Length: 76
Ligand code: SF4
Ligand code: SF4
Image (cartoon, rainbow, N blue to C red; front, side, top):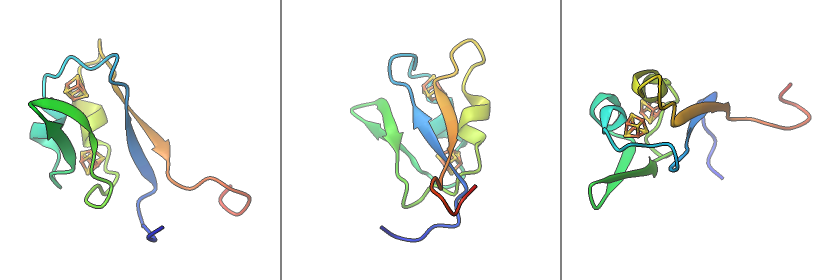
């Protein structure tokens, strides 16, 4: 696994997503993946973990949550 400085990663709940594409339009790193016109997830090789996608996802939807990147005994 490649080392990353990203502290959080976006997690998509596809059941909640209404495919408005706001996350895709606003991601500064073009890390939101569209397949067949549908948001399907994130390219973690590009994603910097800024959280913009989660912020722009409509509040009544909340299909993206940011989760801590590092989990384990040395990462608090
Ligand atoms: S966390 Fe930032 S870089 Fe990663 S997918 Fe969301 S908007 Fe793009
Ligand atoms: S902003 Fe939220 S609801 Fe809209 S496409 Fe992205 S994940 Fe889906």
